[in-house]
Amino acid sequence: MTKRRRSSSIWGAFFLPLVGGCLVAVVVLLASLWSITTRAEEQFGPPRPGISASQRLFLSTTLVTHADDLLQPTYPGSPLVTFEISLGESIPSITGRLLGAGLISDPGAFRAYLQYTGMDTSLQAGEYSLSAGMTPVEIARALQTTPSGAATLTILAGWRIEEVAAALPTTGLEISPEEFLQAALIQPQGYTFSEQIPFATTEGFLMPGAYELERQITANQLIATILANFDASISSELRSGFEQQGLSLYQAVTLASIIEREAIVDAEMPLIASVFYNRLAIGERLAADPTVQYALGYNESQGLWWTNPLSLQNLEYDSPYNTYRYTGLPPGPICNPGLTALSAVAFPAETPYYYFRAACDGSGLHLFARTFAEHLENACP
Image 1 (cartoon, rainbow, N blue to C red):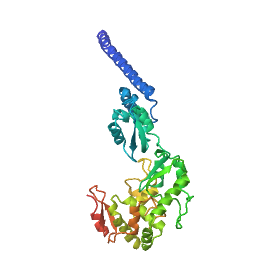
Image 2: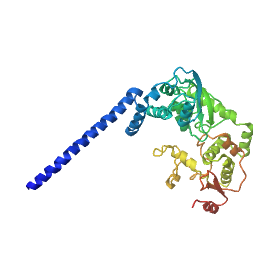
Image 3: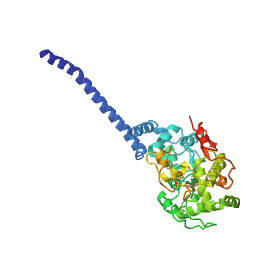
Image 4: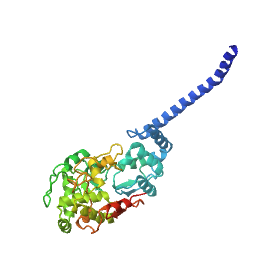
């Protein structure tokens, strides 16, 4: 019994200082980490909401280490120069060009500041008057506001109304996504089409493109501007083409919206149009995946409006938009198509095809087939 007590005492004498030393090291480390994040907040302000602890520590360390590169001008007393940010330009491209223009000296630290503050998601396209006499922090803040009274809204072909609304906060327009949706999802006001359209919503008629707008424009005025552009873009030649295919403008836009979402390569749009026309002619269901994706709506787990991939259960989803369940065109457009898709509807290719599926090489092209047996043969191994 005595030997055991001596052995325990010996081990305790060995481990207690070791444990005590580890605790001291942990306390010192935590104090050091707290000091870094505190110093970063004192020098650069609070971090963006929702930032993770690890990312905050990493970015705070970068900011504190490179504080001089961010809080002092690159070249004091330098004149103003014009710097332009293009629509959709990436952060690495912007910071690289700022470095090339001599406006910042450390692009990595500049990007860290943008990410720390959340400014990386709100840079505005436009022309700016900047100077190397400004600190990089001042330059970052200057890039948050469109330099003139104009703002730019870019609508991409294939976007649905909700995706257009989601783009508004970074445009400089004084319209919230909620205000836009309220105006876009009802009978449009402030514009009269050249022909009668059975609007349920403005889905399908928000013509893709870049719109230069006054920042104070209202939601109804914005919708009217976009609809006017759509109306002006549909030439008499296109309207005649729709009529020759036996479609009203609304039906043509509906079909074009499906083609827009199906095609990856624009050159295939007339071929895809021919498949759908051939299927409509014999009363066959269109069986188009994008119509199911539209019916399903926002996918919370994927963070997408277009669920991908679709499951067999998804294909059974009961909606009049689901062209796997119902024949003919869906009740209305599923997205906002561009002129290329609209032209494919007006002037489709003439083919014997009734089926198509994505090629297996990742090219974005499709394999077309005349029969279901050929269609099965085109399946990826």
